[in-house]
Length: 129
Image 1 (cartoon, rainbow, N blue to C red):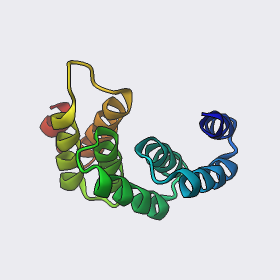
Image 2 (image 1 turned 135 degrees about the horizontal axis):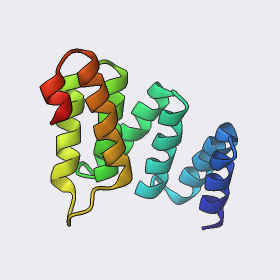
Image 3 (image 1 turned 45 degrees about the horizontal axis):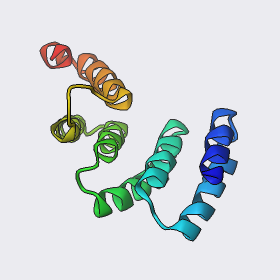
Image 4 (image 1 turned 180 degrees about the horizontal axis):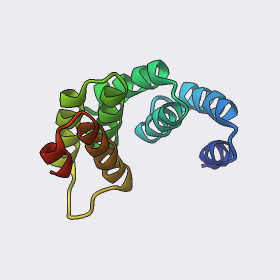
């Protein structure tokens, strides 16, 4: 818990390199736990380190193929590569895994991003959907 608090504090204060370093040490010590991989991929995505985020996301989805956040991050990685249809499919896969009626905020953000991209390429009906 202490490491996780420090990682989140470092990331929140813009010390993303330090947060990633600490994440890597924590993963090495504690193993590739889902929560650590989700946080690492999130930080890497928000800092445009797509190749590293891709590696982390693959590791997460290998151990937990139906992880909602892993699938949402997969959608973001698909968007970063211009693979819009793959992004839509990954986002649908994430939605299929959600239990209950609440959509996680990151999944909602993925909807907005993918909708904007669809709008930008002229797929207005798809962006509205």
